[in-house]
Structures are given as C-alpha cells and as structure tokens.
Length: 176
Length: 176
Image (tube, rainbow over all chains, first blue to last red; front, top):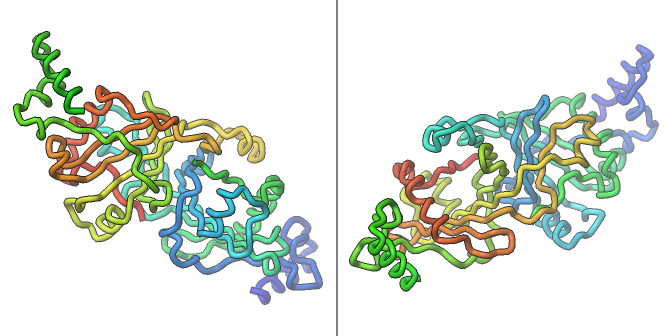
C-alpha cells in the first residue's frame, strides 16, 4: 500500500499532475496519506440494521446499511463521534423488478434483490490514527466476487463524506 | 377475538354476504377460523436482515425484512417449511427523497427514510396449530404508533400469500 502510494506520488509529481490524488498524497509523513480497507470485515452479514436506501441516477441500487455493535450502540445513544472500532456496512444490490412478485400482484410494483449476490459492498471502519487522513474512517469497496475496488474509486469517498462532517462523516441516520 | 369472528360470521350469514370473509369464517370449528397476531413481537429490531424491497404502485414504500434466529437459520439452510416459532418482520418506511443527501450529491437520486418511524410494521408468525386456517402463519400489521391494523386488512394477507405456497407462503427470499 505504501509502495503503491509512493508510486502514485512519484508519477503525479513527474507528470505535474494536480488535483485530489496529488493533494492527498503529497505529505512527507506517509502515515497521513489516505489508507483504504482491503479486507471484508468478518461477520458483517450478522450485524443489525441501521437503515435502508434506494439510489437512482447512475446507481439504481437498493441498499441495507448494517452496523456492528459499536455502531448500533452509538447510533441509539446518539453519541458522536462514533467510537474506535465502529464499522458500518453498506450492502447494495441492483434495483431490479421482481417478475415473480409482479406476476402474483398483477402489476409492476415490486423491486427486490431476490437471491442475487450483492452488487457491491462498502464499509467505513473507524480508526482515528490509522485513517487520520480521511477523517478517522477507512473506506472500503468490494465487488460481488469480494474483490477490492481500485484506490481511484476509494479516493472519491472522503471528499463527498466531508460534507457531513457534523455527523462524523456518516450520511445514514438510524431508522427506528 | 373469537367473539369478534362470531359476530362477523353472524353478520355475514344474516346479510347473505358471500366472498372471502364468509368463506374463511364459516367453519363450525372455531379453531379453523383465521386468527391474527395483535402484539408486536418483542425485540424484532435486533433481528438480522433477510432482504430489502421497494414497492411502488399504491404503496411507495421501502422495506427491510428481518428474521428471528429460527427464520435466518432456516433461510440459510434452505429448509422448508419454516420451523415453529419462526417470525419474519417487515418494516416499511415511506419512500421519500432525501433533501439532505440530494443537496450534497447535487442531484435528485437518494431515497432514505432518515429518522422517520416505520410507516407500518408487519409480521408473520409460524404456529401451525394456532394459525392452521391461514397456512400455519399468523399475520400482523401495526401502524406507526404500534396500533394493530383492522382484521379487514389482515384478511387480505393469506389469499395473496397462497400464491407462494411452494415456499411456505413467504415471498421474500434471503439475499446474501
């Protein structure tokens, strides 16, 4: 990871590239450079529900947001920032019509993922020291085969989550 | 409950009404008449996720389907019928745009329930003897204040779920 970041910095410097990548990795202290989570947190499918969501536009997904015990407890207590060790999972499936349901219901209304594997998985892992460069959260993305997404995708996470700094960078509210 | 069903039968008979209500309640053995669940199963918000769904048409909701341990285990083992004591919960929220998210994302794409209470709650409780008249499942519905829905609403559940008898009357598949 550090070696990869070094190469990115070197390439960016050499090419005179400016922008987020260069900005975020030009620190002389390598610990402050963004790090991303590359392993799927174990047991996430056992976690409790934070909320659900549907995203249209380019995404067209339907999602469950789950949290480990630290996440759920903090949400319910309304405590911010989230404690160290908090992990929030976003399981996203394609938002597709259910032919089975619609046939029974007699109209086009039902969208369920069925037994399809997740389209993609995302996580935010709270470790204030390790992920200091990105607000104390490590970001992760995996495709349906469990393969980690490229750093170029992950570098887009924090700039957007910065808008919600007042809630410790977490968009999703706990839905009772 | 039995008294209410008796009154419905009496009224239906008196008025010569035919249809589902009369058909389902004309049994001489009162145990075979439909019974519904009138109490919210405790601890359902701690249960694990079965799947998510979005329903359009008249509903316009977004849902999480949760299951108690018996439900999740049976789903994962692919065992049918579901064992006695299985409870499946459907928490449905209104499918509403998130102004907060859309402002940050710069476009209309995000639908999340936020901190809104559930629009309605529904349950299916497996008890083959008690709910023999409705496929071994007791149906329940509660509004956002926890008030049980009218029997006239609950009588609509089983006729539709009968279409999915091959999966023990449960529409929702487990989504990995």
